[in-house]
Amino acid sequence: MSAGHPGPTVPVLALGDVLLVSVQGELHDGMAEQLQQDITERIARSSATGVVIDVSGVDIVDSFLGRIFAEIASSTRLLAARTVLAGMRPAVAITLVELGLTLPGLTTALDVERAMELLGQPVPVPTAFADGRKGGT
Image (cartoon, rainbow, N blue to C red; front, top):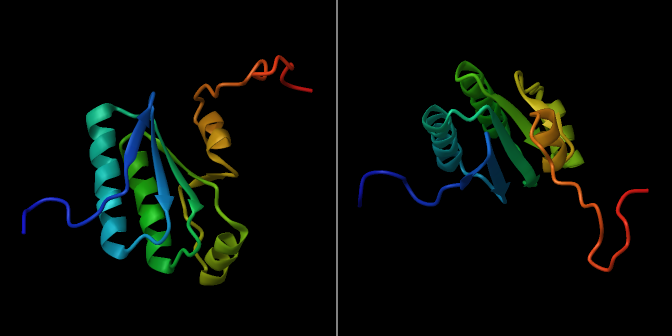
C-alpha cells in the first residue's frame, strides 16, 4: 500500500479563479475528508477566490457530510475564498432541515451557472443557436 490518497478522490477543476467540485453519487466519509483537504490545498496553491460544490448528483446528505460542507466553507473563508453549494435536490434540502443543519458560511445556488454568477465569474451566454436562430426572448 502506498502513502498518499486513500482510494478514489473527487476531482477539483479550476475554472478561472474558481474551483469546481462535482460530487456524484455517495460521498463516503474518507472521501469527504480528503475532498476538504484537497480543496484547501488547491486554494492555497492557486489563490482561487471561489469554490463551487455541485451536489446535483447527490441523493443523500447525512449530518457528517453536511458538517464537512460547512467546514469546507469555513476553511475557504479563512483562505479568502467564498463557497457556493449548487444544485441541491429538494429531498436533500428537506433532509438537512430535518437534521437541524444550517450550513453556516455556505451560499447556495440552484445550479452551477448561478453559482458562478454569485462569485462574479463570467458565464458564457449563447447569442445564436447553431441553426441560425437568435438566443434570448
